[in-house]
Amino acid sequence: GQQLNQSPQSMFIQEGEDVSMNCTSSSIFNTWLWYKQDPGEGPVLLIALYKAGELTSNGRLTAQFGITRKDSFLNISASIPSDVGIYFCAGEDTYTGANSKLTFGKGITLSVRP
Amino acid sequence: GAGVSQSPRYKVAKRGQDVALRCDPISGHVSLFWYQQALGQGPEFLTYFQNEAQLDKSGLPSDRFFAERPEGSVSTLKIQRTQQEDSAVYLCASSAPQLPYTEAFFGQGTRLTVV
Image 1 (cartoon, rainbow over the protein chains, first blue to last red):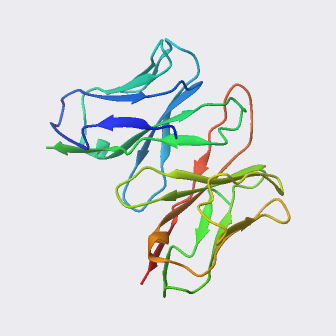
Image 2: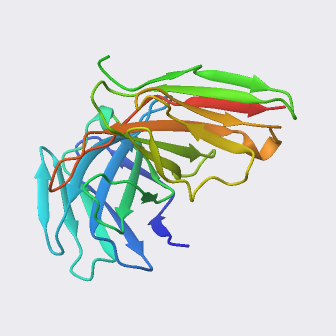
Image 3: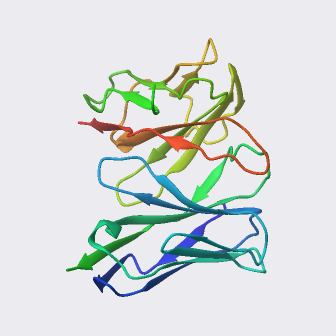
């Protein structure tokens, strides 16, 4: 089946640093999404990308939809302690307007040292 | 309610026991999804409802898993004869489809432990 690859499994950064996360796929997706999950909570959507090449920002977050539609990256600038959590990329391969079947990566656990 | 509500938050079941997990979606959301998240993994799609119709159940891992949404609102995920490999967090999400894209809001999940 389809798989999204996220690596490394964990990242450790200093508060104030920028961090970049990458996500690659063996197949094409029409929509790319980035989620953050805190312990004991469900994933929360950070950014949604609809078109190949699209670059979208949400505060200190910037994400891009790769032009091949097989990859995406997420940048977090000027990290703060509350950025700690697990970051998942997800792709939707069939546009339904209802993100009915998302394929998630395994996630990257981000730690921020004060 | 304000968000997607799932109950119970935690469930411990003996192997072979049947369990029922409940999801209350955001009011007015016609789409509802169930995902299974094993420890250290990303969520994996189980099934999808639009109103009361189950449009996709391709992710259900076996015929021991059954989901329903009889009135197009609350949904129940039932697992019969639970096995240890069923231990996971079960996430429910709901959305109100809008073009070009709609956000699915996730509940906090039910952590199922089969002993």
